[in-house]
Amino acid sequence: MKDQATYDKNYSLAVSLTLFFCLVIPRLAGPVLLLLAVWIVLGGLNGYLKFRLNGGLVMFALLYAFYGIGSLYSNHPDLAAEGMVQKLSLLVVPILFSFPLKSKNFRFNWLIISLVGAVTVLSLYGIGNGIYGYSQGGGFSSFLTVGISPIHHPTYFMCFWILAMVGVYIGWKRQWKYFHLKWIIPFVVIGGIFHVLSLSLAGILYLMIVVGYLVLYEIGKRWSWKASLGVLIPVLLIGYLSINYVPIVRGQYQSAKKYAQEYASAPEDFIRNTNPWTGSQERLILWIVSSEILSESPMGLGTKNYDDAIYKRLKHYGQHRMAAKHLNPHNQYLTTGIEIGIAGIILFVATLMYGVVLGLRRKHWLLLVASSSLMFHCLFEAMLERQSGIVFFCLMLGVFYMYPLMRTPKKVEA
Image (cartoon, rainbow, N blue to C red; front, top):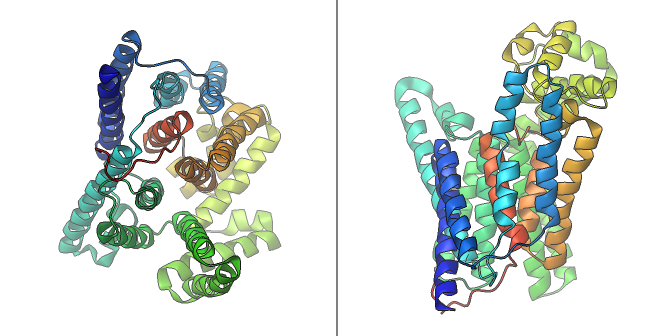
């Protein structure tokens, strides 16, 4: 038992450090995942791990198999092969976490501390990058979007932040060691500020949903549902005021609303006559042309074939500047559909829903937030087209699928 307990601690440390280095130094993702694989193989050979089948992990592996089939009829075998390597985490991580600890005694507090450390390092680097840009005459814009998040796309960075914020909240609720309000409150506030600076409307909306729910949940638990209802009105009012009077949020919302109305009134004219200069305009046009491509090819065009298809369709509509950028659909569901068909979309949605349902059933809130966060952000970004998304979510969901969110008493050694 002593050897098992020692391995449990080292295993938890290995997974936590793997997460940290994959986020802080993305280029090390391959080597650190290989080291984790070696450690898991050693644990299996020594009898510390036991094979367990999990539906979510199986579906991730199946999704990778779908992409493999799609690569067989891709018009660009070289790009398809590159895409299969990029998405390798969809296969490797499920295999690794299909051999969990026999004791299931995973130290979630270490994982969340590692995540907090990673977003802190990334945030400090972003601030430094912003200061440098400002000193070079970039103005306050140096602290916005990619200025504040130069390593990862801002939307992905906000996914890291929101899970870290929820993680420290759960750690405080469960009385994990080191999880004290004196640092948790400033950390959460800073996380909110970074959401605004990222200019990610999806990140801000998801943050509002999570924070709103947690506030109402705590009030309802301490007092009554009537008290929660009484707070809901001012919360909605704050959201309304933010959308209408906070310049950054208002600009994003008003732009999205305006472009949607223009498209609804004259779809083809909107695509042909719009000269997109904002992300909202580009997204709407990309969603429209991607939907058209998917409707014409419901079986999919093959792995990594969306680039050519979107390029030709944008050219057809006279959007030459957008076509030259070689943009993806900025929606993972559409991206998956264009590559591997409607069947691929169904499998992907089922995979995400599995995590949401399992999180609710087990009251595993980290699993619920990770799954719902990925599901929500896939509406606005192709989350599986970057290593930042694939590695992060595969690692987190792999842990959350296989280990229950056990309470770690405050006095127990971390």
